[in-house]
Image 1 (cartoon, one colour):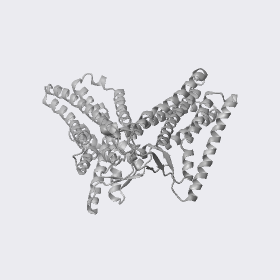
Image 2 (cartoon, rainbow, N blue to C red):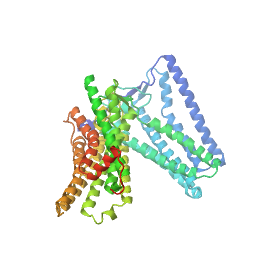
Image 3 (cartoon, rainbow, N blue to C red):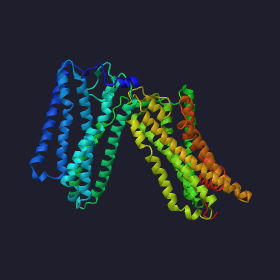
Length: 571
């Protein structure tokens, strides 16, 4: 949006919007009207009954029921901000809503929805204290604290979206004015604005996503602790009572979270892969199948060798065994689906399957970066501090480092990938790649999200740069130490153990940095596929060869594993 547009903000030729709702013949409109009116009346009756019961029965004057009554009061207003206008529109020919009325509905709908998220969080906190801290519960959950929590829910809910909605209302709306919905929502309104404002839209979606993610994570965390406490309850009756009070709340949380998630027209994606004639497809299928099979055999052999050969019970081979295990999963996150798609005419992958592959591919790739850094640290300690090496690189430290690699790898990308999955995908659904990657997915989203994309690339770049800088620093110090070794045989042995690791590092980081650090706009789709093939398929395939060719112990152990020879304890 330029400066002139900003100065003219708020000046719109549109004075009212048309809410299409559920178009259809008059009989269908009457059926919808009757059904929704009945649901609305039952909703009001049910929630008012809960409020009256809590108000009039002294037995229900407890924090849990106070929160429930407030929640019912909220639900009455939440349903009332949309349903009455929708009922009027069913019987109306014009189906209009004024400009100010539309944005008032928009504001109340999202504010009350946000308040509902916070109330569900507070109710989870109440259940956690009641079950996990029963003795302290009366002193913690006092009437004053209940009132503060309820007030905070309402205040935070109504303040959270006020600024983004104000900015959206100040955009110019020049026409058309038809909203294909039964209420005023962010996506239809942004589509009708005659001035694009991706930053405002992204801020709005980011605020909504953050609220949903943080509250649902808190609720899940609370109920994990509650579940653990309930399982320790000795009596079956006690367990049943605890589950009954928490189960109803969890059902509401699940339904509400599902309803608040982004809606997508796209239900599946088409992965083009490597298009070509049938003969080319058969050749590629055979090639990738052989590479995949050899990758599994090679890395599986390394794991077996490290497991069965006592000579390889050292930190270096322990890390190598875990690295081989990682490579098996890394290549398996993409290749099986690619092989199926090569022989398939549809070449489709479901929406959830695509984002699941996206998550595992990047999480395993991040874990690989961290493993390479840990392996560089191991080589640095072994060569630069040989006397202290057995004391430093203990089994406990190795286990801790391996666990950190896996945990950090899998915890690094859930939030950015969740944000991307919440973007609207309206079509087309064709991905010119053999896997679900960041660039093709962002290109298919019908709502621009530059901040999400920037965060994703910044995080990827930081992981790559920090790990590669640490590896280079370790090997610089290591090289200096190797050059000071007096014997040629000692230098050769040191270079052989480190050379294989550096080869893997160069191959992996070289291609990954071209893909995710340097701008990819000038790189053709075919070149992106080839680069992705190198670090996602060829690197896991070459790792067993690289690590075994220069290592006599590993070559001997692999020969024993592959050819079924008995491994001697003393050889």
